[in-house]
Amino acid sequence: SGHPDQGSAAAGLYYDENQKNQGRPFGETHAFNAGGWKMRAVVQRCNWCRVDSEGKEVSSIGKGLSVLLGVKKGDTEKDAGYIADKIKDFLEENGVKRAIINLGGNVLCIGKKTNTDNFGIGVRKPFAANNEVLVALSVDDSSVVSSGNYERYFYADDGTFYHHILNPATGYSYDNDLSDVTILSKDSLTGDCLSTTCFCLGLDDGMKLIESLDGIEAIFVTNEGEIHYSSGAKAYVKS
Image 1 (cartoon, rainbow, N blue to C red):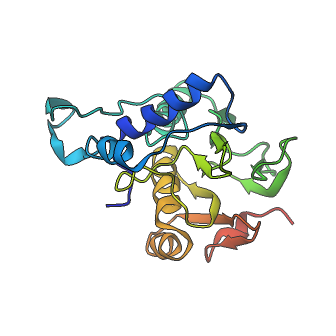
Image 2 (image 1 turned 45 degrees about the vertical axis):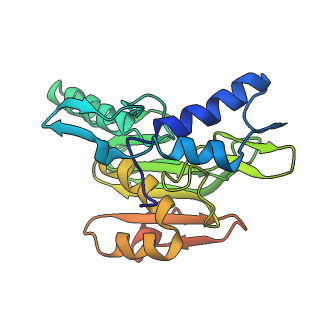
Image 3 (image 1 turned 180 degrees about the vertical axis):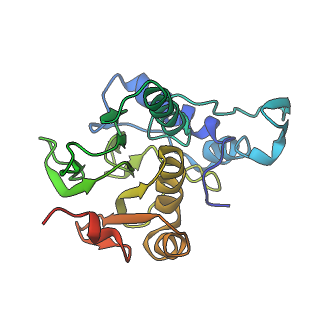
């Protein structure tokens, strides 16, 4: 389908194992076996339709299929957004009026920073070594979630760039000229889902999706560093 797939764990594990065997961190160059025959075998194990589930329980998983149950931010799991929302609920139930919940790529704000000032949240410049801020946002009781290809990646010996957001239809990293998608929404789980989905869809289709949704804004950053805003996103940008 070319979209996030909870049954795509096999592809993710294949990439991780290739990197682990080289003993080098993300961002460095190393040998990578992405041979067509082996990748086709991996892709055959990526299909959420082979998971039978009802409600919150999984009744059966297809033979040879690996399923993502939720771990790291940046993969297709949405644990970070769900947890951030639950933390916010807990804090508000206990009388907290102002707070920032920071789970890495997920930032969720409770109220304002002060009675008159919003929280300032920075969108990181992709691949910047010093956490340089690309866009500064002014946020009031909202969520900011980013997904991009610059957190977990490596270059193969032939110069091919691989990152962790994988297309379950091919087994390879998405190559759609995007480096980051940041979603502004009321809750963090929605932002988590949409940031990855819009990255997979690409700039044009991702922007169309955002414009069709109420209360959601987005910032898209291309590999060339161009910044594209949804119709209401610039209202959040600090002047």
